[in-house]
Image (cartoon, rainbow, N blue to C red; front, side):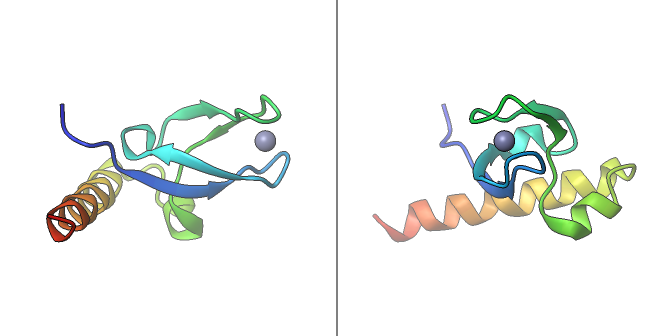
Amino acid sequence: MPEMAYFIQECPTCGRTLHVRVEYLGKKVVCQHCGGRFVACDGPAGRASLSDSGLLMKRASELIQQAEERKHRTH
Ligand SMILES: [Zn+2]
């Protein structure tokens, strides 16, 4: 099982910072603090390109790659 990659998103309902798994990019998630539903996206740019699944996949793989690099550096 590979290490999970996360990105940071602010909940649009309660404003808290959430760690969202990259696999949820572009998908509906529920805030663990307030229960608010929203679509996971990585920043305003991600929000603008939600309909472009190609861009989302690219961004997701970038985040996964970054996580992989972090993992390698620690060893
Ligand atoms: Zn919330």
